[in-house]
Image (cartoon, rainbow, N blue to C red; front, top):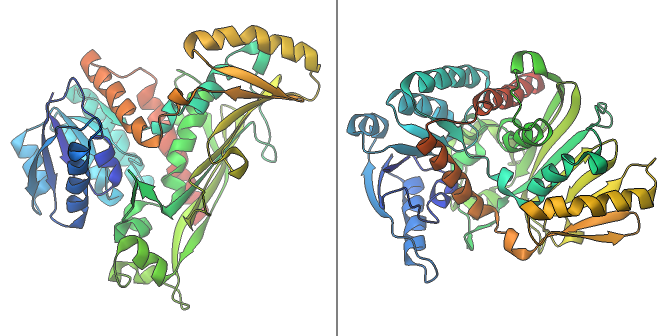
Length: 428
């Protein structure tokens, strides 16, 4: 198959090409406006080609220009297109590519507001009519502790049944902490200025929360079709800004001042307010869930992006922590319910472990008092950047098969309804 890249304004576009694929030709056509976004993408892919260990062999055929979208549609140079960049026009881009009968793999978020959600629904209908697949890049499904959290939740003697929870104590809690300044592929990231404009990037409620809402659905209702019209209820949603100084902005963008399109968000004290933070309390088929995303400028010394997750069952709680105590590496622990007799639970867990090991060889358990930590061989911790290749391989398998699993499209719609409806509520 032939790969095309459309408007690669986010480093995720390059991460898709951090490896080669047996089903993809090395010649890749790139359509984008000329500028630093395109330059950064090309430089990153070339660095993968030039590395000593497992170098890639991509041959980029770059087509710069203001008419990049029209040229992509007219040239018909690709079977699969990857879209990862400025989100302001992303729904338009993916609508055009599926209409042109090109399988489309789009970075999240595919919609950043209510009108975008409506357009996305139409795009899925067009994709079905044209016989092509439209899919988003959900890397967190490939993170090993999340996979194991899901696996243990399916073992009734250990987890029991998922609780319904309450707004005050949800059955499912997921929190993600990110940083504007960090390293990608070992190099300090340069953020485009538009990344700080929520009209172009989208607010936190519709960006990173896409991953969190997806995991709630994927773990708690595996392979079940969700109907956003009946199964989702937003209870409350809130948003708040991260404050960025001019010096911090200059450090991560390499620009000397805020561009004109950001002046609307610069306060009287000179600080840029970016509505990158948000929290959603909602129910999904009656189960209470809470997802929240936080953006700081940079991590503390030795820190990194973090993830916290809890699934509360009648038999135990499955908790992922990734803080300083865990060395900023995700760690899954299993904590029996308060009314569970400890040694009975220990026996159940010991009986269940071989079932998990059949699927994940080498995984073990280490007991500390009344808590069990799931031990994971280092070979499973491939890192966030490698997950982009895993998602791409999965998508290519779907393309070869000719279809997505029947639950994927309705559940993508449920996911984007949740995020865009929450933004509408929080902004009102």
